[in-house]
Length: 255
Image (cartoon, rainbow, N blue to C red; front, side, top):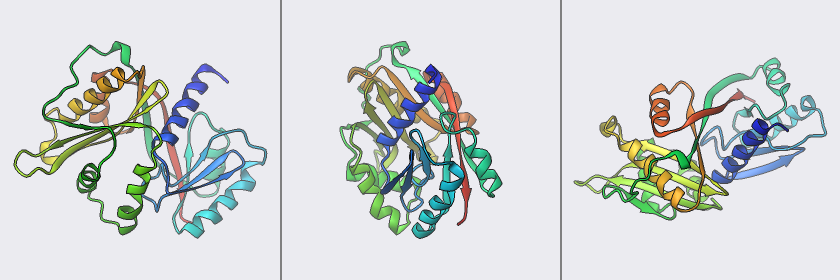
């Protein structure tokens, strides 16, 4: 395995730890994830190891599982996985959705700053109020999601850095961010800012706070995932010190 493939595999493993699914099944080097279609990442097939069976024999079995789960069949395609899988899925009528860019940063290159931002609240675990704020920002109303997503956050097996910003008038959470510490990395997740407060540097403050606190906790590197065509977010992350590492996408089919 090349150094580049090993780096991709490591980040993919960290991402699986950082964002557990409601249910999982293992199948010959693949993991099938299910979370009532909350996100593509938590509701897809991922290649996690070497396989024995040919992929063309496994795809129909996976489709049957997602049919029972009553969600589309989704496969995550990364540079690490079997290069033939994407073509096989295309032949079976799978469409591409959600091109995603994975960016990384070397925390030793970040300028030394004080991570005590008086306008932000830091917690060592995701709290009920943080999660309620996230649901409001994302306009989450699906009853299944409201029921299972708190369980998914509670199942995160790693140390966390949960950041939020509240309105001085109402006390409502107006912005969120989450860092997941794992080995020598911190994953940056759940960066959401109320639309009324965007373009004020709040997202940047939250990301920098997560990175500085993670660095003080021993992290050496950071990663995050951003929709590839979100040029505004990518410009912000480059300003902070992130560079593109690789891209992945999903193949989706109603089954």
